[in-house]
Image (cartoon, rainbow over the protein chains, first blue to last red):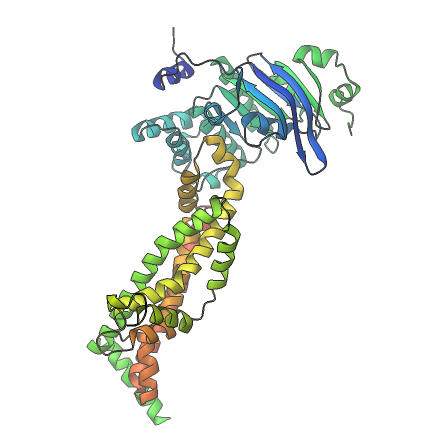
Length: 256
Length: 235
């Protein structure tokens, strides 16, 4: 049997007996600022492996829900459980996230990946070899020593994805990763995501692109006005959406 | 007019022949200011980085005081250090008044707020952009500080150059705490002040030209750093 990176990582960090992070459970999760409820009493359980897509119109609270799941913001109410344990720093270190606008350090492409590996306590020599490996997988090996911020938008996002994957996350979050990319770059990123699920990585991706949701999703979380409208296997969601909002959104209508 | 052109020629002659008196004064000025700027950078980077990243009570007040101190008049800084180091002062036992060390202390007080405030601004701007990504990667607060300082390196270099420009050109603080003693605490600016009032225009002019050249070099260096930073998109 070929060992995939996730199991290697588990052995390296002596976490062989660590519980899986799934299922992800949100219980009565709310986020308020001032008088506005941006995320409104969301109850949710994600057990499926593969790719979960959070879908909905702008302002539905998709990005906020993703940030809540990753622990980047604290909910005002409710709990987030990963494998029955409440979200904490340790759990976040087993996850990685790619943002809509690529966030790259003012360093070379290779140094960006090496930096992230350093934060996770990898040795200096391991950082270099793994960074170069990750760049090769992303097709960016010829840009290893290019300052990351002069790369094109598509290359920057691929670099962000390569950096996230180099950490061997068990869960990978992506917030509209292809929102401003051309079809070729979008395709490249979607391929990497599908490949990642084959290595056992749970992928949770926010999008408002129905086509992308169709191409990627195993299951769909549909949000509207901060509320969970439905959570369905993708096939069923696209064939028989339960709500008017989802039906309108899928058929390309303007959902307000 | 004749006097002036004679003085001008004499000044150029002193520079061209590397007049030992001139070199001694330039050397002391550079030694004092470079040391002060190096110390101020160490303090300023740390203070600025910590202010940008950590949340603690009084943080806003410290930032406001730093900004106010950026405009601290050099003579006031000199006066404060004078009072501290004078025989009756709390640090009088160290016998540092009228030594280069006293001048370094005064210039550190002048330059640290500039570097700290610019560092804080640089780090806050970067943090705005990096915060979520760094938290996602699992960086601790201390790691965030060092990351921001390194990623802001080009802007920090310009902060250091700004501090150097201020320190090398100031006269009030070094005059008060150094005393402008020949061969001991005589710097370019204090010499210019003294020699001009004595009527020895040549030496004053020569030093003035050197100071101008230094100011010009600092600005050229600033431009170079900015250009380099924008070429790498590191600005």
